Length: 225
Length: 155
Ligand SMILES: [Zn+2]
Image (cartoon, rainbow over all chains, first blue to last red; front, top):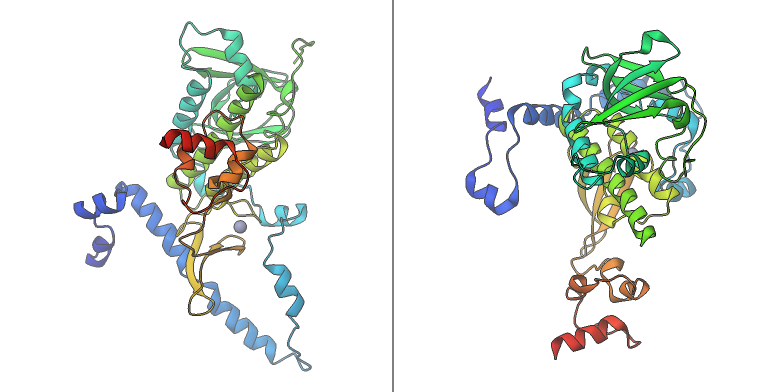
């Protein structure tokens, strides 16, 4: 490691730790942060843009400055993206380099704490029905789920951390660092927390993650895969 | 009572999603997509159930693309000045370019910390600690419950 890099990665002095109320990150975290920070701070595309602009400028003959009196006022206000822009920008797609199982283990740990807290301790004496009621409205991102039964036999036994929940599919990441897409319909999933195993009937769960918290479930219905 | 409990579950879920987004970004700072997905889910839940989120949470979410704004990682923070006196903090989302502007005003008081906001939710059991933070010179014009509580506390 060059000397300058060592300087950048130096620990924060003790007296500053107390004054600022911050702590040094662990080595790997610090490196990941530094890389992301540098990548975001340095603008490589600027140079390209400039060249491009110069090239084109020679071609355009009747060049008029675009009027920007009205558009400037509007641009300050945030407008959401529409569906096409969302698709083009791939705003929810996880890049392949982040599809690593060990990166999601802290998320799973956080999820366990969340569920235990939600169910009020989750001791062996807890009422299973109450726990199920809570889990019905809970969030499942970060849970380790397993396909127990399915109409398609090749899904059975797949297990991994649930990363994204969409309307019709679960995206899970397996121990082999593979991102798998599993349809909810016609499958039964198992979620385990502290010895409690609850089964999720995927066909009953076919809605977006956010819609479930507002929806009322029927107590008993016919369940067939 | 039952209503209060139901909201508590939802708030716990929002809290979890917000923390999950932070957790993802701390693990891999460039994985903006997943963090954004969690924040997006968080926002939709809050909208569906009509839950109010704290300004400190709202200020760290991009209004346009829903990413979590962390200075240096997903957002840039700059100081800008309009004239000699007024200065702004501009937080710009690095993935979509949307920026938020905050006026640097040390005397700024959030609506939730103001006495009038407490009037709205009088039924809430404990408006205690936030009252003491309010500046002394502002007096609620109607004889409100919080001010009465304050006077009894002082005597
Ligand atoms: Zn944005």
